[in-house]
Length: 373
Image (cartoon, rainbow, N blue to C red):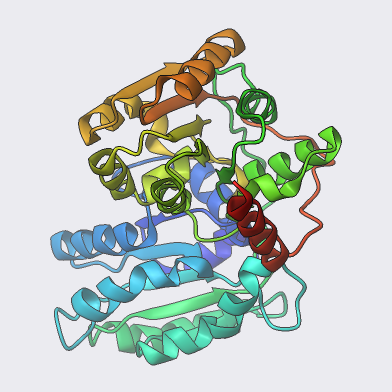
């Protein structure tokens, strides 16, 4: 089904969400149609943020908003769905559009498998009626289901469309880019050149894939790294937990701007604890690149200033490799919690692979390495 047709049948004029590769057709349609527009389309920090923003839209207008997300974001909406939106509380109606990663019977990456199994069940448990959209769904079937859903929405209930892989189409392309010149994979290469055999915790998406391939190309141990293939936004908290319990070992966290925005409160906890052996590197390309390239707001805010306000003793921003090397070396040697924003262009190698070890093997190898330190 064409994304434009899907949007027309839903009948909403306000969308907010966190981008998902399964919803790339919808995301690109929204960007080409509205861009980032406070009255029609906002990319929020996390899915709970989206639900609350949509609730505010409904309170102000009385109209029905749409929240789009990957199914991994269901956990972030449980609290607002149960304690804000639910008909037993404020009865705020909205439409969820959820990309179904890890659908049973469809091959996917390990972080999506269990989430895919419980996607429909979580909605059922929250009393959110759902409909699965597939490649075979007709416009008439979708329109009939939307008519059923309008009756539920009129009662202050929420509904959800679960989108199977390839169910939505959109032919027009969108150019996502910025003015930065450094490349994420090269930034990571510089980090591992200076970090040596220090442990690294890396964030969700292409950063972890690139780290794995760089170790492979260098003939280095994968036990040095914990690849946070899921749980977006939590890598820095994992790194904090490791750093506090390995005080004699320098720990590095490779993070992304979308992940930092998703759970920015983690920076406050890091700054309050001030682990002297942790360097937090945020590769900022101002985009959700791994799921398609849609923009984040990280290009419009001062991340080092936020880090300093949270209590990081040192925080800098760099935009070239010489400055990056100086910042990494100073972070390694200064003995204080350090924040480095590395401004990056969008883009990755077309032949970028995926880790060849399982998530469980990665954990076991990493723990064995930590125990040897």
